[in-house]
Image (cartoon, rainbow, N blue to C red; front, side, top):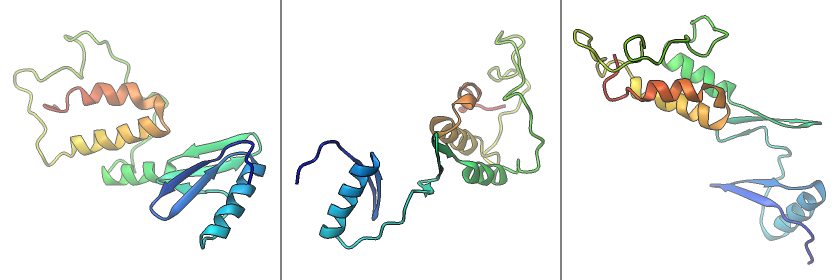
Length: 147
């Protein structure tokens, strides 16, 4: 068998995702079907928390299901959306509300899942929401003593 291009085969446990041109995908899928018992489920719609839409102009990834789950987990599902990712504030330590703890301020206790919220938001920022990366990074700076 002679190959002219290449395919990318992403394997997760017993699921395979093939990436390549239609001709290459067909050749690869037919070869794999001869070697292994497998089903072709068509274009991937959901994979490792990513929702995938195949459009004529390309592929659209989102994590709306994961985002809604995170909002429910941290009791933010009833919150009102904002057009700004975070309140615009000065980074001047004397004026910044995200500053380190000052005298008289209480550190949030373990009953407030600050680490978990930051981790969930970092996952979103890394995968499909780079627009929230700055805000999440700023909040993560104070993970050791959130106020």
